[in-house]
Amino acid sequence: MPDPAQHPSPQRTGTAGACALLATALLAACTQAPPDTSYERDIVAFGTINHLTLYGVPEERAAKLADEVDAELQRMHREWHSWHPSELTRLNAAIAAGEPFQVSPDLAELIARSKDAYLGSQGIFDPAAGHLFALWGFQQDERPTGPPPSRAEVAAVVAEQARMDDLELDGDTLTSRNPKVALDFGGIAKGYAGHLVIARLRAQGVDNAIFNAGGGLQVVGSHGERPWRIGIRGPDGSGVLGAVELGPQEEGMHTSGNYERYREFDNKRYSHIIDPRTGLPAEHIASASVIHPDGATADAAATALVVAGPEGWQEVAKRMGVTLALLVDDQGTVYITPQMQERVRFEQPPTKLIVGD
Image (cartoon, rainbow, N blue to C red; front, side):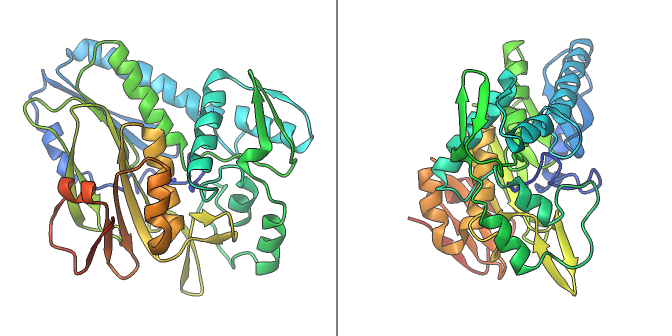
């Protein structure tokens, strides 16, 4: 999920040391602003370092706003965690017991967003497949070790057919037709959180801000006279493939890749991004980057495009309402939408570039 996406419980995207799928080197301009115009704060949440920059806000007020953002992120982290005790683990326990569960407004909205992404992706983004993510060892704080699950173990979980469309939300009461559903929002939670952070800041009069949730970014406005300029890492996680400028309207940019979170055995690397149709790690696409006004959509779509692969990514992007996408396969070929091609400035021209329809 799942970033299951994904991409993961919210923690699946990597450690605090790894910190980003997107290169942060090109955000250096943010740290060079005069102290009276730029305020920055690192916040540890969702298993990574989140970085908040406010521009044009007096320092005392900016510090107070950052405190509020910190508190909100800690609350989200606690309540959406898929293996530490949380509202989400209580919900999953109720589903397993065949019992209804009363969800909070934020969790209800996260479920609704996840269901929309599931339907738009035709099921290849499926946060209901939490048992698959757990089977592969991606619901724990440490990187999984040892041999991967057997094909028979994987097939048994896939046969449970746990899907998002098994869920029904009536007001604030959630029920499931399938007790094998186990929700894990790792492929969408950080994108949704980024959207909520920027919405909170905008409601309090902040016009220029960037929130980096461990590699998934949400921005609004600009950095003075300069737009927010963001680097995209190369497919092996090192170096900068290219850069884009975001804003001034609110935009989110998320990258899902197989180089930050994985398990390794006998010199073979297994991505944390699981294809719910097969129960196996996604192959062929090393990373996918998506820009969209809504951070939750960008986050979920980036994961879905990795799963869709070179043959299916264009159809999935269209169904999810994504026009700005860039993928890199395991051979270094870049696949890109025409709209994204207009936005990206490559550090070096790709060896092979395939522009979608």
